[in-house]
Length: 459
Image 1: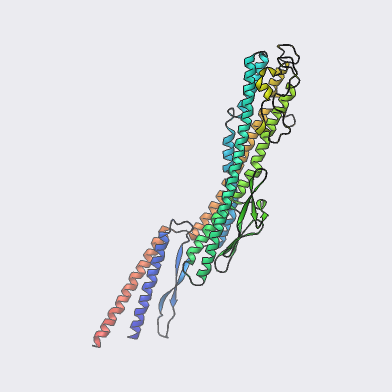
Image 2 (image 1 turned 90 degrees about the horizontal axis):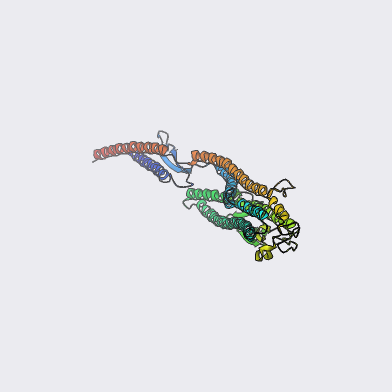
């Protein structure tokens, strides 16, 4: 009798075990589309015999294992920063490339229109209409430079705004990771939900590594300590160390601070690093090149204009307002107020003789003069070089991003093979546990029937 009751208990435990296996399969299927979810596997163990002639005590549930590979998780955290950095650069430069306009419809069109007007003025230097047209085209050219500089400045400000937003996201994720660390510490002490917390932690680390390059150190309770830059702490246990932002003169760009120390240069990965690169290096380089073109227009036109004579026989002054240096030239270029007020002051002749067009022809010939890059490039060439530079930088970043994205994708595929849920596999596991449950139910019924028979014999 006692043996039959033991068998009945064994069958009951087996039914619980197979039901648990079905629950695990159902949990996996329910979370097939949950980001960061790691497939679960039920762990069973055979209960050893309790006496010499016993077949064994059946089965017991020993736990639940989440299928993870920590090496792949760390590899993913290492690869994502570089991929997201290049993506941020490529996206920012794509906007810059669009802002520069199409060939023949941007600053180069304004340059050509200005020199075309000078050519017509050289053909009819006494024409009041051509003089006014030249002033209008010169003013349009100055406005084109200012507009282009404004677009580049806006792109730089947008990148700076992205840096500030990114830092806010980093601090929010750091708080999230610290909270998960605290919960994992409690789970290690017996609180439920440890595996779900670890999934959430890995997902938070994945998001964080896309923003900034990080280093992680596993904790004994399942949490992680997180650092960035040159070992700067970000999360230690349940404590966070926020990254602060300070506006720096003269541009007001955001500098990153950790514990009062500027660490902007230490951030080399993630989308924040890409935005910093675009904001502090690439876009200022384009602005400098644009300033050089604007400054050359001003100095070259003024140098020739000052050698001539205007309609009144007076010596020509500055056609454009003189600039002290190339820095900021594209933002400040303007036609001299005297010429705007009186187009007759445009110096067209090499002598005071009416109708002399010597200087006007020289001004028109500046279109093809090699006045930039050590006498090897025209003004239009310099603009074309700027367009090419932006396009080349954009393509380089895009190609690099694509290459690194493939690496990230391969690592994610490897992770999916370990941690991902396969509906086919889970369907097979469901069938296995279902059949096992049915078999154990029959065993239970057989033992129950035998007990009924024995009990009836003792009545």
